[in-house]
Image (cartoon, rainbow, N blue to C red; front, side, top):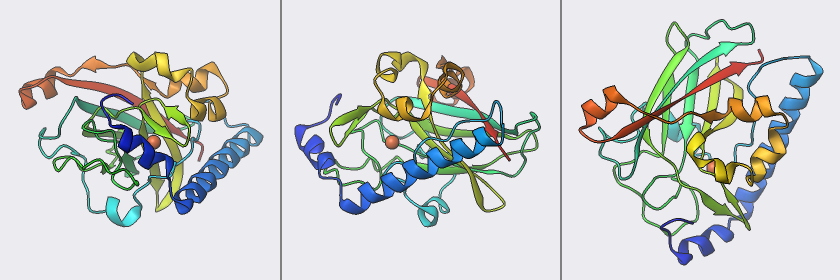
Length: 231
Ligand SMILES: [Fe+2]
């Protein structure tokens, strides 16, 4: 793990039993959703990926907004995650609740995990945003780190959930095109993303955000995800 201590890695290996069970439940749920979509003949929809063991839960997320950096004060590489939620016919989904959660860029830890690494006090670790009339959403966050879970490594990713009418319609993850060296070795991608189209749909092209860089007075990158709901 880049820039993190061996102590942190050992803590991650001791993932609590409840976390492991939660991760397994999320994996099975994601796979079943993808099978359902395939059976229904849904085409071009965003593929489900597992929730992982570190989802902070609805109660915590409800208290957060779309700026996870407390006004660009979080440590690390600033990043704007933009995107759009549409249905399979391409129509924008207005008023959908998009939730994200991820590691910080300080120690590569989540809000809820057994790591002993300190939290970044200026990072919210999770956020929520309602889509506008165009189905668009935007978060101000930081680039997440790669991390170890059990005995394997995960490529840097941002977890995403989309709720419509209070129901979870999608759980997936977004990746970065400048981290491709790790993408081919990521076990979650290998398990869930079976086609090249599915794999590429989850990878964000990383660019410099001119507008956010001006606002922050520091370099800010941006990337975009198109989230397509099966219905
Ligand atoms: Fe994760």
